[in-house]
Amino acid sequence: MSRLSVRMRVTLAATVIVATVLTAASLVLILAVRDSLEGGAADEATRKVIARATALREEEPILTAPPPEEGAPSPEPTPEQSERGSGADPDETTVTLADGYATASTVVTTLDGPVTVRARVSLAPVLDALSVLERLLLVGVPALVLLMAVMTWELMGRVLAPVESIRATFADITAKNLHRRVPEPVTRDEVARLARTMNATLGQLESAVERHKQFVADAAHELRNPVATLSARLELGLPRAPDLVSEALTDVARIQALTGDLLLLARLDGGEPLMHTEVDLAQVAAEAAARPAPVRIALELESDVVVQGSRAHLERMVANLVANAVRHAASQVTIRVTADGLDVLDDGPGIPENSRELVFRRFHRLDEARARDAGGSGLGLAIARDIATLHGGTLTVRDTPRGAHLSFRLPPPAERSGRADPVRSSAAS
Image (cartoon, rainbow, N blue to C red):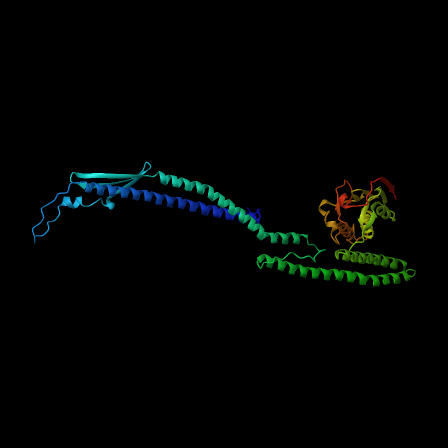
């Protein structure tokens, strides 16, 4: 029951309650009508008995007496005359309902002795009326229950429609579109108050996120100039203390890279609009492979795999994927471009299955040896996934017998343009 929607639960509850009430009311109605009709038939039989008993009295010979003398008191009527002048007593009438009849009987005392008078009234009209009533209720009650269920379903649909609209809108709101608001019903009920509360909360959340993004962007921007100045001063002192200055320059380079990553993440989080152009993904992969690397980089490319998007962002995504693979590869990295997207594979230790989503978290490292010692900041794969998502694609870790396999998948072909038939080629560096 808990898995059913609120609309279904309310409809079922209302249907059960109304069905129970109507069934009980129908039974009470049938019993009341039966008692009323049977009582009417019994009354009719009683009236007939009384009328017949009275008629029987009137048919007896009347015994007359000589008129009393003047001044003499009138003689008292005899018991026979008293009984003859009275009809049957309704209180002494017996009514029986059996064999389809209402039978009334009474005993009348006559000059010839007691006489039993009976009368009966057929119960067929009563049974016919009850049968019609039962058929009407048998059809009417389910029809009313069904009508009520349909009306309740439709009414709950109208009542919950604003809730579903709020839910659907809220589900689409992410950190990148916190400016959106859920629709507020024009009513002044609980749903409207809920929508207003959610919009107020979204407004506060948007302000907090914007302040956070602005802080990161400002901090990264402000760090670039002093770090560049520090790097220039260290380079001036390189001839005097080459070992010390080289180590310092390495740390400064890492700070510069981290500052650049933070600034790029701030722009990505801020929803910076892309400059869409046609980008040849194979060419971007080839340029990334051309950079010096301590391991062999093999290329498996299909030509004319064109993507609509930002060339600078896609270059950064591929560069991050290749740099991550080079840091962990034992001897070789393979870059593969097909009509479906781009894959980067290495022959290193691989990524455990339970960490395949963790590697895309910002500043996450699988261990100190794999990241910090090699110069990684824990932002490369996070930035790569953000860029893939920004272009409507996905970036995931796939199963491979050895090493790591990072896969960038493009949107369906119908959503892309400018792609020609792929032609496979290969190269190595």
